Amino acid sequence: MQVTFKKGNPMDVKADVLVLPVYEETWEESPLLLEADKALDGLLLPALKSRDFKAKADSRAAFDTWGKLAAGKLVVAGVGKADEQSADSLWTFASNAVSKLHTKGMKTAAMAYTFAGDDPKKTLQLLATGLLTGSYSFDKYKKKDNKTGFSKLSIVAPKENFKGNGKEALEKGLALGEAINFSRTLVNTPTEDMNPSHLAQAAKSLVAKDEKDLKVQVRSEAEIKKLKMDLYLAVARTAANPPKLITLEWKPKGTTRQKPLVVVGKGLMYDTGGLSLKPSTSMDTMKCDMAGSAAVLGLFHFLVHARPNRRVVGVIAACENAIGGKSYRPGDVFTSRRGISVEVLNTDAEGRLTLADALDFAQTQYKPAQMIDLATLTGACVVALGESTVGLMSNNEEFSGKIGELAEKAGEDFWPLPLNPKYEKLIKSDFADIKNVGGRWGGALTAGLFLKRFVDDDLPWAHLDIAGPAYTATPFGHLSKYATGVGVAMLAEWVLDE
Ligand code: BES
Ligand code: ZN
Ligand code: ZN
Image (cartoon, rainbow, N blue to C red):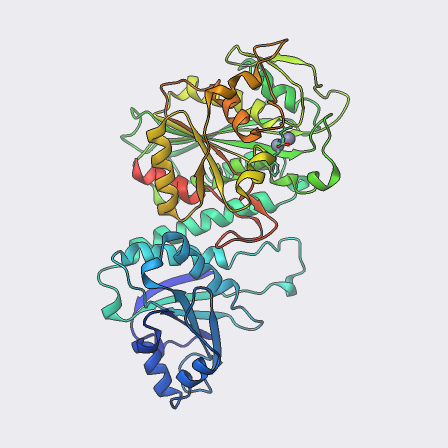
């Protein structure tokens, strides 16, 4: 799908549908709405009033234009109150504008740029992202004729509404939208077609022919053994599909000496729970357990388009938590790459095992400046924060605050959770240094405290538990149903900010 931005009068744009965004406070005086009303013989305003239209956020009223406007249909779309807008609300607005509008046969859409606010470029960027994420659909397993969707979308700004050049903002917004959709598809693809090798292939697919700044390396099980990542190997060892340790490095000229920003993603291609088997109704969505790694690949998808001058490393310990004769068992003890021994009391708490070794590997190999991990780690986090919000844990208050701000700027919901040292005793083990479960209460926190044991105290590190928002049963705002691509937008802000 093609998204363009141009200046001109939206009323003159030929398209199947024209979206006209209006604010709650001012919609009746909106110059474009009045222009449309005039063209429609003064019938538009009375019709809106008779439908009790108030321009509230996510409200829409659609009209045929009977050949009196260049567009075939006019949709007056409420943005809500002008002074209550945020990155989240603008992204959501654009996303809903396309996802909720589409009816069969409509191929082209135009959106009038009528937005207020003091950062029109950022607004344009968010709209571009929203138009792409809102038109996302996962239909690669469906018959062709079931496919619907716009092929062309244009954002059209009357000159007085947008000063300056919008090209860069548009491109950044589109790059982010593509990256998020790429990440979603990796997660939505069933494990049969998305095992560790497939994920490695997806990582390699990011390296275009002449690409010199991105390196992708894939390590086999034998190489992982040499790296002494025994926790990771224990989780992986019974699956028919062998593990792949995937590393990505964005290293443009002049950044070789920089300490990198490192992002680690949980890459459980499927999580049966292992011998501590999950009940079927908890297992059926577990193709999503690699959403953290999909966010990492989404970020790198963005990097090759945005090409920032910042060294960035991605690490993914991809594997499958299967069940079989070689399964690791509750009661087993393994020694991590870092030398800390771990008693496994529940094979379904596997993510923290793979991540522990991945975090340690990332630190010893790359000496990060800052490190973030993303993981669909605990059901407890979903219970605490629901399906819209990422749980943010950190060993560094300042860094945590910064990540929270970047998330807000990116339009994502993050909420801080405490890594209270009082709870450290909950993961003490009688047979090893620590155990991989911390009891029923505070499950997101004991998982976070487990990971913290594998991170250097002086390294600013944030752990993002995305178990809720990575894959939703109910869509929220711009988070689509099923895979959402959560985290990619915040990560993009992070690398551009540092
Ligand atoms: N992958 C799951 C967590 C999860 C739950 C992700 C819901 C997405 C949606 C994880 O590996 C897991 O099973 N965690 C256990 C940990 C427990 C055994 C300590 C959990 O949360 O129940
Ligand atoms: Zn699990
Ligand atoms: Zn898991």
